[in-house]
Image 1 (cartoon, rainbow, N blue to C red):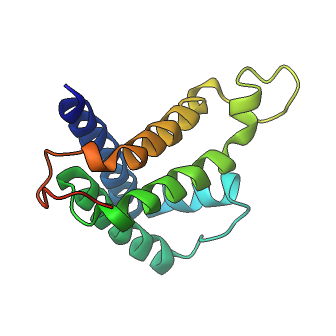
Image 2 (image 1 turned 60 degrees about the vertical axis):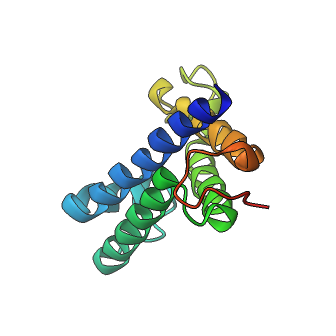
Image 3 (image 1 turned 90 degrees about the vertical axis):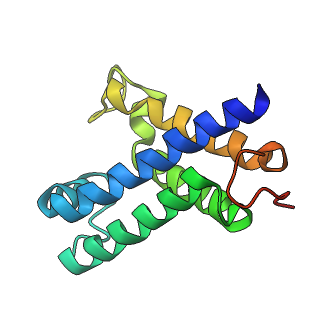
Length: 136
């Protein structure tokens, strides 16, 4: 059951990265708006967003199939952690009772980050992968 649960985490978390990356390629203007609003304007160049989108999709694909887990999982934790930092107000105050510019729909960012940590923590138990060897 554990291997199946880790597979589910891998497919959904990696899939999320693929969608995020695809969004940067297909809707560049959306990526610019996101960077401006949540990441202090860092990474708003169209070329940068396209490169980041491709890299994000590649990382997502590696996570989905379980290749390069030793570095892919920590990269996943960092990437989802950066996303979490970008929406921290919405995690601390989802309804905007105290903090401005929050949105309850961003609260799951902390869940996504936590799931990434779980996947990394139990990487040696993650047996349904293409590399099928312990990630230690």
